[in-house]
Image 1 (cartoon, one colour):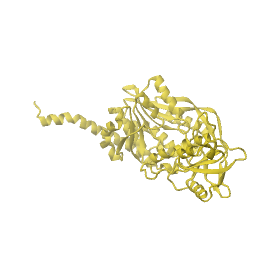
Image 2 (cartoon, helix red, strand yellow):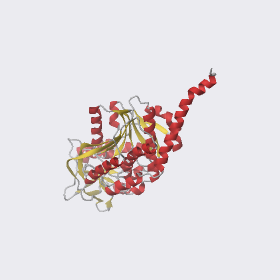
Image 3 (cartoon, helix red, strand yellow):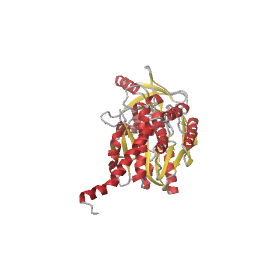
Image 4 (cartoon, one colour):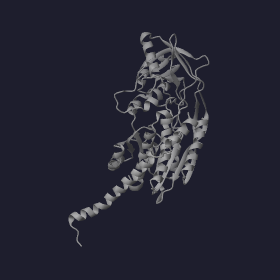
Length: 453
């Protein structure tokens, strides 16, 4: 029997249509499982309440590693591994004190790698600058013995707070080291946030091997504005600081790995992950407890949807993202040593907010355009974009092996209200948004596993 041209076209198109229908059905089942009877929020509650302040070298990070191993065991992983990693061990010590002499106290939090002040504290005049370049131009004669105050706000004109953060964070990450090179007694940095409150945001600062660390702290936004106003009235205004931090020898930690073995090509890996550590002052609910429980949830969701992965799906909960990235470096090193092939390395470290899409990166630079073919399947769930990117800090190193990396992109407007603060707690996480993020990632893992990228 001969087929007409029109009938032949329909017949040839039918398998693709059926495949698309199958994909839609599987994704629907993933979302149904995520939004009904999900353990994700309960897991996050347990992690943040039992093990807050999971900074490298802390007992709480050690406890979280064992907790994560136990959760992977409950999920029935085919293989679980604790990858040993030596991590930096910095401790804040007693609470900081920063004040304007003759004025009032300022809300402050020491930065990671800060040195301690002498027992009697530091009392010195303040130099306010808006950039590292401005500080360099002042030179040693103007800076030596002073407290350098970096006071450039995050640019509110950027629609993406992450872009504003990226432009401003050099003050925190590199500013204190430059101040130390110029002989400064200490450094203060305006917190990295758009919020108009007085909650200081800690974070890491880096001192190269040839630079002796100095005391360094972040100021809450209202405190930064108070200090700036005091300097406008009196250029000779001074501050007093008391910081009690110390750096200890490196400590042993672990990346926590669990995987479901692929049914057809188990040697090829799809990686999902987040980082298990958090800042010492923070419960770490959004940064990155949410990413950890979402990564764990992906294994459950694929099983609940009745889908058996063709390739190995691996969860990696990285250690030491916040103040060293040694977990990511060790994972990438072992990937090279073991010659492990990764089809995709997907990270979630932008908070447990409403998911909007993904960023993707690969050496050819076209991963995001190739993934765009899945937008019709994902748009009904509020996922409307695949953008070019580098995944995230923990999976980015895999790009050098030629692998494709990705990062979940949630709504970001509230993230830097909480980032690296005491406020990053469970009550700031919406359970439904958390579940939707896990479902979005599981859907992408399913599509990559089934169809390739």
